Image 1 (tube, rainbow, N blue to C red):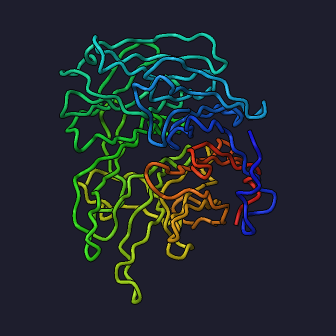
Image 2: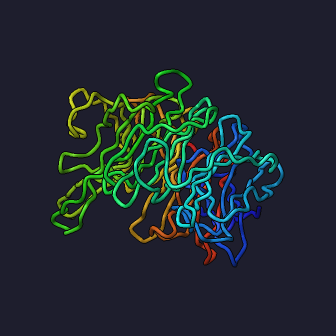
Length: 413
């Protein structure tokens, strides 16, 4: 862990520190995708990975592995996995176990293996090996999604799996019994990028809700000539009931961008949106805003036009926002987000959130990540559970690496 004061500037908040967590010049490293539960609840221990990119890894890469970063031990990195094909990690809510899959789908015999290991590296256990397919699903396994999510009681883990070449299933693995249930099975072109996220609420029935992403093709975006993805965000209960939309997009002006998460342990969810916002000086102008909402009753994919929709633009005090990826602390009071600046740099902003559904966020500039806003090097910022530290990726050294923001609690607007 190396202090990087050179990455701060005169507009960064006083007392803020940037630390580089990984620095092997021969192997890229980065954080796991920012919506994934990778932290122990003590906000000191978390999991990142090397020989990886911001959206996952290569299942055939023998150098890819998950590492424990112990901030209480000077950011020391300890390998947690050694198998080729490790993917879809998540840390259980107690901070005791790392769950992960080993992808051997393209081998013979075709297998998907669910494992767990303690965060101290001991007691590695194979929980279940699925050969050929999953129980109750007709068709061979075609892929496994690189992200997983776990229920707030630590009893159920969910991810997406490809079935054959044409379908995707949301699979819920019951960790106490080894059983698998399939609350959703649908066309691959609609559900391939599922982004499943268990609600972090400790109370039923919200703790059985899973946030999912539903794609419906693309449409032209005049006058720029761009093509925008039509995305719906839904909530579904882990038993397949309670299918509800989030009221974002779908009016021809606003488009759900495809980056969303729960607001802490509440049933509120936040999403970034692309909004056509032409001005007199720039008729092609578009903004990327941050909006929070509650799920509503099913209304045939009407998006923001859903009857009874409750919406609050958290970013309304930012002038011409260009917000893309973000993370929220466990209390749902703090947020970090990347801002894609017109000069090609990706900036970070920190925000304090007020009452859900009512208040705008109080945003403050944090730093320039010195990383260009392209898919290969997305910075994907997120927060520790207590909201006091922030994390991001950057290729500022020429090789993708993982970074940390310390003393972030002092950067409120």
